[in-house]
Image 1 (cartoon, rainbow, N blue to C red):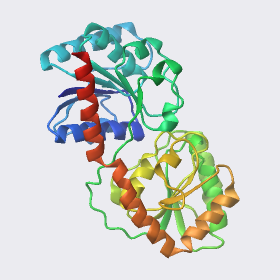
Image 2: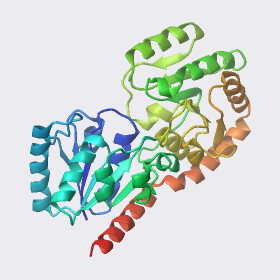
Image 3: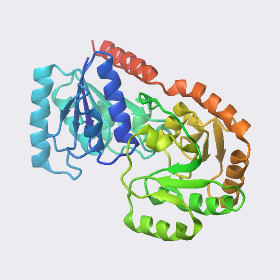
Image 4: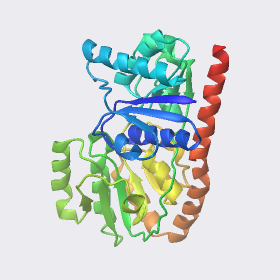
Length: 349
């Protein structure tokens, strides 16, 4: 197959990581893959030197700009014709609009649209011409507009633990971007209670999405001895998970598909998380971690203390997590994607 991925995302979030993982899996399976992304995006950094052809001259403007869109369309149309592209796969709103125009010009091409966050895709014209929409979880599918439901399938993210990890766990970690939706104040406040009972360090690791919130959080935790990392997040598993005793995720009301939870399971780290969005689809409560109702700082601290004081239970959860992580293997994702495209191609004949 010849596949063109479009990803108008800039940060180090789950969408960019998901697109890169899928592209690498398809490339390793022998398919030809092109990736259109921003020149300074983490997606580009992940894919450089991997054999996936990265295109950075396609602008994918976030605002409706007819001139830029026309130039993008010319470039992609030429690529589709020259390389005999079978599939165009869009992962966000700017590239979704662009992929729709390519589909209208080339009706025979397979048009796939992914949704990674629990927000509806409002474009009704896309829903008419898209061949299939891929929701990253049932939580995301449940938020899709009615016109999209029939064409929507759940397609879980995957993780390829290529980097071998030697762990020396001793820190409780929250790995999230610094944004209000991630509920980092709940984590900081709960750890203040935990540190009175258990001698353990904690760390928040993430990219700065909201400067004001970041500064407010810094002042909030300054007096509690909460270690924090304020630099840009490295993608090294050793850095993110090598010293993690427990992963704590405190999103308030939205979680499309927690990549951190998936990565933690592969590494074998129990996850303590607020029960929002797709968390219940990933973390098995009482088996691979614990999920609790969001907003209760005392309950969060209580469960954290219980897990920290019960190493035998954590070891059981670690073993369970590694077994359960097979659901999110890169091999599973690659096979499902290939079967999906083949089915769509058959229906077009």
